Length: 346
Image 1: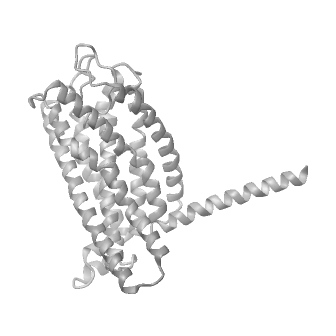
Image 2 (image 1 turned 135 degrees about the vertical axis):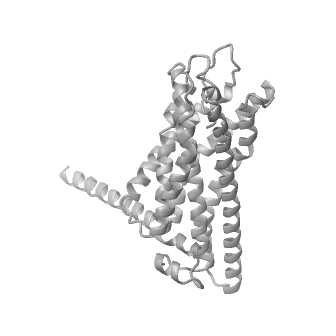
Image 3 (image 1 turned 90 degrees about the vertical axis):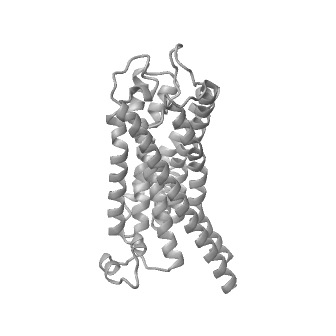
């Protein structure tokens, strides 16, 4: 996949490092890693205790797993950006962790699309989440396959297919980054790829980016429809339910905000950046340098989703929210009891 690190490059090669990539981004990644790890560890701890009896819960659980995979790549990038590991660490990034980063990102993007569909069916068509697979197949005139997005069993099958599809698409980027590496070639991922690897890299990039744009259209359609439906309902009912509408808006549109903040900027620049990596593209050194800086900045926004996704879990999943608040209140109660006993013993 795209070259993630901007570590030092031998003097006889083009150096894309800058104050931005060497001094600004590493501290920001440290903060995102620390915050994201603590939030996602807490989210995973709660989710593994929450029964996956609804499609939404299944999708959110898979998003949490994808975030943990993405977080596991951050230490490698940080170490390379800070100049540790010589040329061996960029080699590991090119062959393994960069692929894992993008694999995790696109898994998360697809699950955002699935959540959007699930919310669309629940809000627009008022379908119960307990629809069975058999009823979804039998009632051809009633329940469509979209209604199955709320079914937990269907969601698990869809999750399995999603992980499998993206694994098949991205795993060859590991296997075909197999040319011998040395101090001259380890800092350029494209120089480590076989001729087939270069072509697969290009095709998998187009495939992943296409998945993103399809998901973007899907998300825009779902939340535009939800917004119109909620507005019409509010005008029709005209009840004093401002607080209810406000809470619904926060929970539903939080995922839309995360999607546009984290993923849209990167995908606007990804195609020209990927083309600039090709030996025959004819980009000037200045153009490659500029595209690299833009790519590094926008990929940081993509990485920021590991901190924002737990907010989605809290706002969208009532079971998750109740479990978290119950744990926090229980801990606060135990702390107050301990403090009370200590003051009594004085």
